[in-house]
Image 1 (spheres, rainbow, N blue to C red):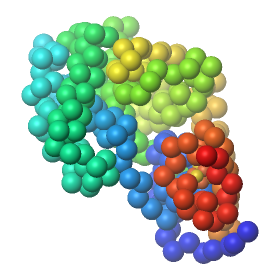
Image 2 (image 1 turned 180 degrees about the horizontal axis):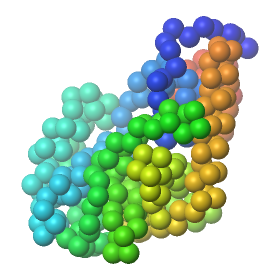
Image 3 (image 1 turned 135 degrees about the horizontal axis):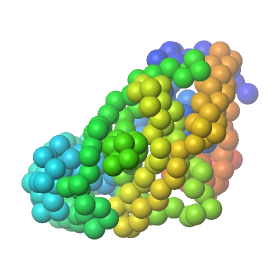
Length: 265
Ligand code: SF4
C-alpha cells in the first residue's frame, strides 16, 4: 500500500452523489473529489442534464403554460448550455448525431407530460440548493423539484433519464434522495413525506414514503462515511473496492488497472 500526502484539501462540503461515490468505492471518491480528475461526459450523463435543463425551464413558466409543446422553446438554450464544445468532444458528436441527440432529448422531456399534469403542480422549489451540516457532515446539493401537495405535505421530485430500476435494488435507488430528505429536514425544518422519481424515458413513476427511521439511517450513514473519509485522507490512502457494479461505469478503470487493482472487465 502506498501512502501519499494529498496535494489538495478535503472538499469543504459533499453532495449526496459524492457520498454515494465513496460508499461504492473510496478510491473513486479520491479520484473525483480530492484529485479532481475530470470524468468525461457520456451520452447518458449529457442526456440527463439536457432533459433536466428543459424540465427546469418548463417549471419556471406560469403553471397554465407548462405544456408538452413548450419543450421545443428550450431546445436551443439546452443545446448551448449542455452540449458545450467539451461535451461534444467527449461524445464525439457529429452535426447529424447532435441533431438526433436533441430530438431524443425533446422526446424524453415530452414524455414527462404523459406521466403528470404539470399545470396542476404546486411547486415550492426548482433546482433548490441545500447547504447544511448533518451530524458534523457538511452537505450541499440541488433538488430537482420540491412540491407542495394538496394535504400540505412536501414531496421531493427527481427526474431520471435512465432505465426504470429493478424492484430488488430500490434501496440504493432511493439512497440519494432519502439523504436529501434529511437535508430538507435540517434546512427547512420540515420533512418531506415522500419521494417521487420520474423515469421520464421509461414513463414510469417510482414513489416511496419518507419515514423517521429512513431519515435517521441516512444521517448515520453520512456520518459514518464522512468519518471514514477523514480517516483515509489523514492516512493518505483511499482503498479501491473493485466490483462489477462499482466499476462498470467508472471513469478511472485504466488508472486503477495501472495501479494493479483487479478491475472486473
Ligand atoms: S475502477 Fe473500480 S476500483 Fe477503480 S476507482 Fe473505479 S470503482 Fe473503484
